[in-house]
Length: 193
Image (cartoon, rainbow, N blue to C red; front, top):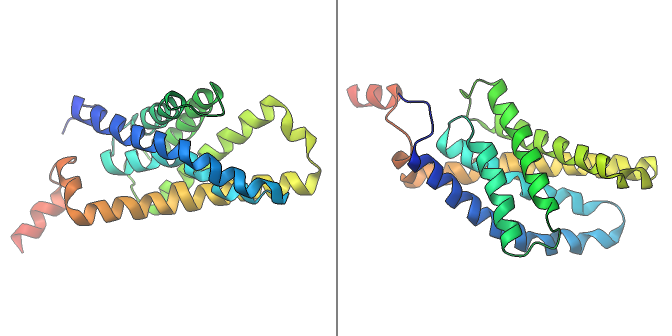
């Protein structure tokens, strides 16, 4: 089996990413609605901005897909007029890189909810590092920054991990993912029974 990305893999990844780029754009008001409460509740929704990487990887299951999907989704969000400007592209690169590193750490052989959740959390860590670099995290008191970090990572696990896994499982139940992946040994074995 060829492990490299084929043109079909890239096109499907970009289509997934563009759909999530639009989702990212319309997700900003959800995030902003929760911000005024002051308890960092909006951070529970932040994981949605990491979901393209995990969904694309769980569907296509090849190296580089998570990174490509997150960068393309950030580009799509930027192109449809993100209120966060060019920073979405930088965040997309870092979030995609951190998610990709988790999949690489498992040698691109695991496609379960745990790995997706770890990738979502890693993307969350990447976004926090960028926030730290931008300097505004130092404006919070200790308990507020603790809430921010905790809620962002919880949201990353729930949205980019668990929700992504559930979405892909729902797609698999329709049979559409058989077009993306070659027949496995388990598929052949099930025919022999």
